Amino acid sequence: MAKRFPSESRLGTKVTLGGGFLALALATLYAHASPASGYELSVYSGTPVAVWLGLSAGFVVSLVVAFLTPGDSRGVRALALGLGGLVVAVFVALPIVRGYHYYGTHDALTHLGWTRAVSEGTMSPFELAYPGLHTTAVVINAVTGVPLQQSILLVVLLATLVFVVFVPLCVGVVVDDPFAVTIATFGAVLLLPITTLATHLSAHPMSQAVFFSALFVYLLTAYVLSGRDEATFTAVGAALAVASIGAVVYHPQLAAHLIVALLAICLLQYARRRGGTTASSEHRPLYGQTLFLLAAFVVWTEDRGFYAGSLEYFLGAALEYVLGEGDAGAEVAAGAGSLSAVGGGIGEIFLKLFFPHLVFVVLTVALILGVLSKVVSTDRENVRAVTTYFTAGLAALGALFGIYFVGAEAGMHFRVFGLMMVLTVVLGSIAFYLVTAGIQGRLRRPARATLAVCFGALVVLSVLAVFPSPYVYHASPHVTEAQTSGYESAFETYDEDLELMGLRNGPNRYHDAVNANEDRMRLFTGVPEDALEDPLAPQYEDDRYLVLTVADHEREVHAYHELRYSRAQLEGVADQPGVDRVHSNDGFDLYLIRGTAGADA
Image (cartoon, rainbow, N blue to C red):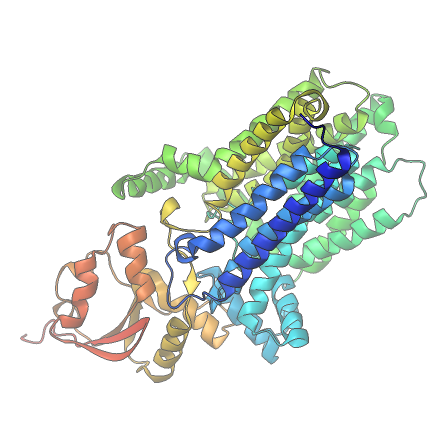
């Protein structure tokens, strides 16, 4: 057999990389040329198969080249990692690439309204507790001319890229080995902070703030490891202070969570220095940076009612827990009951949503135990130090998670979980590296390829659940132009003396988006679960409106498996006596229900 020279091997690798970039480019162009023609229940099923094949090809090339490239080919590996990052960028940007009018319901619609108000000058950014998302979107809109609803989605993409870039950079500060950075890059593309429960790939300031916190964690790590011998004021320290201000402005709740983690690290540093630990004395203390973040938090939130609301929440949650009145268990039971009704189960949904998280949690726990038991070599002092500090932060955030959980307030504990995943993906990547550090040089290429396949499988399992879809018993928050124009017409023409109803309080958030309400609209009501079982007109004494959309139909029938409303009930509304369709387009119907209850009295 002829021997393959290194130059030939590298040429083949570069050609393979070129093919990966070409596949990505063609997939992106095809996705752009195949825009959504109406509401799509799932980003996954709505996107053409050819697009997924192209993205998959690009990602497989990235994964294989990055794992199989020899250690002295850093430039080739960097290109491979860049290709992987671009694939993730296109994946996250699919709602933009495929021409979605907007992506995001519930909070995302309210934030769209606030962004419009800031853009039009009817609301000052300083009236908002967390104006980062809105002001950034307004700047993008002003500079590029991209519509506001698309500008907001670009901010979501930007936040995701910050996470994907700075997680591996953080690991690179701790471990001076390109293989560790490679592992961390593919750990980052798992997008573990996103759960679709309380953190989302739509306009949601806390979700984007959690992603941006990867930059804060990177600067924090570099600052601590820079050593006490450095100058009092350093570029990294200044950058960390700026990042602290950014965290506060982008979302004070994230800043509060970071303060909790930093205080725990400060206590650990103080205790270790009091105990005379030599290694700790070489690390830069975080006391000043923590005080600065705390001061910025106090200044920004002092006149925004944050303290009173938070204190009331925490005290109330703690009191309910002590008295045994907390409803966390009831909420879990209710969720389990709903899943069972649609043919799912807690175990199934846990594996779909959290299996990759579980893998990285196990890796992180193994690393922590390895450091505590001194299995991790003492010559890896940076690894031991960062693991210890992050463990303190995770312990503090874990306690905060518990407090939120017993309060059962709108899934707030999963917001803390998202931040915990930022630290976990860093530690988990380091653990993965320590376990496999010898693989690059000691095992044959097929073994390293198997390692790449295993990592690829984790990525697939993770990205399948980051967009809401029937796979996780949710509907896509895709907002079509027909839905928006339908609600705009309805709000302009409906008789305000009559009640306006929708499924699951749909009109309220659309009113926020269309009219840029300063306060969240709660004027409109939802249709009772059993209302559509019988004719509507005899159930009401007064006339009222009912909104039904294509999105409502797809969600209730296909995502929720007719749990509350059946296909026959939804399609039969138009044929009911006393119900008139007064406005309609391809995705929106407005009905007038002429109440007849008590008419014969």
